[in-house]
Amino acid sequence: MKRDVLIHIKSLIDNGEEADKIEISTRGKAFEKDGVTYLSYKETDQNGFDGNSVLIKAESGCVTISRLGSAKSQLFVKPYQRNICSYATPYGTQTLGISGIYVSHKSVSDKKRELSLCYELDINHTFMSKNTLVITYEESAN
Image (tube, rainbow, N blue to C red; front, top):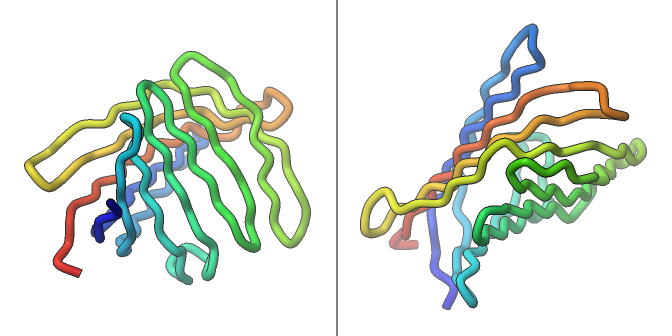
């Protein structure tokens, strides 16, 4: 059964010379099926992707983040593995390498969970950034 949740995303993007922090809070849905956790939410102008939908699938040892809308992408993060991701925008499509460093999914309290992941992003094997995401979500009253 889908539950209403408050989602808070902290993102740290470090290109080796400077680091950018982005924090976003939004409402979304969460549900579990066959041991897999799903989170979904709509993006807003907070991050420049207004109208896109995001689906996060957290399963044992890996995370898939899919974005649908004007900027389509599917990011797959699994520790010690490099995967290829397509990132489509209205301006063109870019192929990216995603090298997983870690994935963690744990309970913080009875109603609050935390999903953390870290990966390196490259273009044609040229390092672009190290990215860390901490996604917390908790049931909301609606």
